[in-house]
Length: 147
Length: 179
Image (cartoon, rainbow over all chains, first blue to last red; front, side):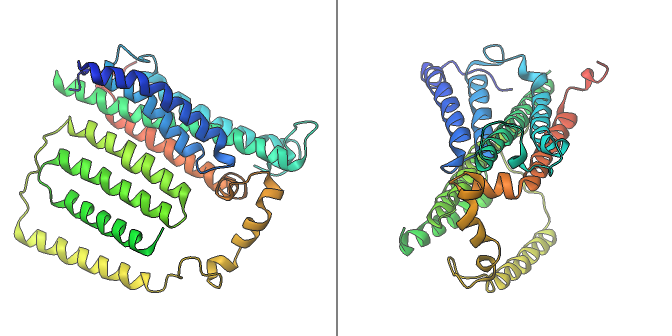
């Protein structure tokens, strides 16, 4: 079984690095338009920032609520992606053609820009939720074998 | 990046990959595999595929290493060698044939950055010239991934989610199945 570590160094590092990783994940997601990065990488970083405190402080110290619910967030991510894709389709355009998103007062390329950010957010949610869920499942199985 | 650096990174990744296979202690094997992924990520970055390098570093060296580590807690740290000699010979022969086929196939790959190669002549020049104008996105990789090939990425995301559901169904506690 994986027990929380009692070293001060591990605790302090986890406490310092968790918000930094989260900030970097947000940067990678939003800045994916201009620099390397995007939904997949940001999602993995978000997952790391959730898993790190669980490893350092144990399951009670962190988002224990997420334990069973993580996989639902993954479905929300795909729904966000497909929903943004469906919106132009309903309005008479093509599936996933962000240029026809109903955002008033914008040029087509700017609409596409926002459409891409929207679906990248969906990808981030799904990847992060899936990774966290797999981690929790593995860990849970470990605790079960222990009994 | 010079050619020397490329070869050095290639050599290091080959050495770490071999180390990950031959080391007896599985914990060391997992960490060696992480090092291999990191060298591979540096190699991708050197070839100009920065997005691929980022993914390799984050997923290959980071997340999959973590999953292997957690999985190791469910089993023993030591590798068990129980395979008979014939089985090992068949494995070695199969891998040899596979390696030969891969090397044979790689002869036909175009030179990196060759403007006359088939992939460069197809849609990629359109993406490189028009993607900023058409999508408002300077990073061509993001424009292709999320816009021009958005339907593929939707499929990929669904695949990841399906993998997550699969792990969850396989690994969850059995006494929860009633609730």
